[in-house]
Image 1 (cartoon, rainbow, N blue to C red):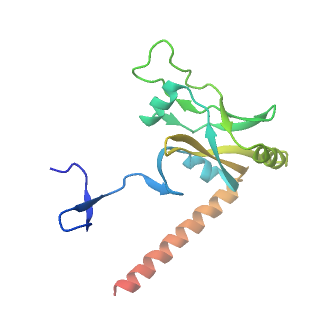
Image 2 (cartoon, rainbow, N blue to C red; image 1 turned 90 degrees about the vertical axis):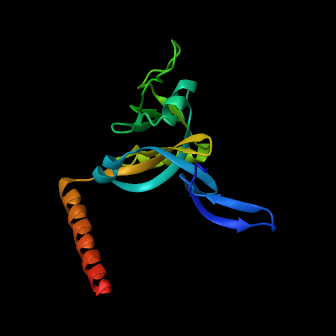
Image 3 (cartoon, helix red, strand yellow; image 1 turned 30 degrees about the horizontal axis):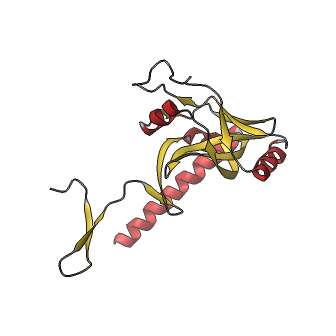
Length: 182
């Protein structure tokens, strides 16, 4: 009868019952967030210093393709050119039902940030070894957004150190869980 999962009932009056549905998207600052692409490799290869949330300027078929989940951030990066931030090598697949006005998959896309944020990003990226990498591509409400991070590349020994820390934390958590269950 109901196509949604019912998580609870609330009685408003004797004859009216309000049904709460399970929320699929995550809540972020009061608006629903649907994650399209996540750059997990960047979290492994770079040390994240600061994260900014930026809007992204898209064409119509790009939005439709992103809603279908056809985006990839694997080799993407951002640059500041002429006072604007541009996203390069972000692959958004052509829309399946698009016509001759379909978009180019690897075109550069403008990121929408406040002027002071752009100045701050420019200052940070002028430091040696820092760059801009997108971490996440998502819809916040109806708006397409990107989590843009100022990062520094990790050396091989840093990666190994992070892996050993993660493994020891897992082992400690397992032991603690076993102790609690006894």
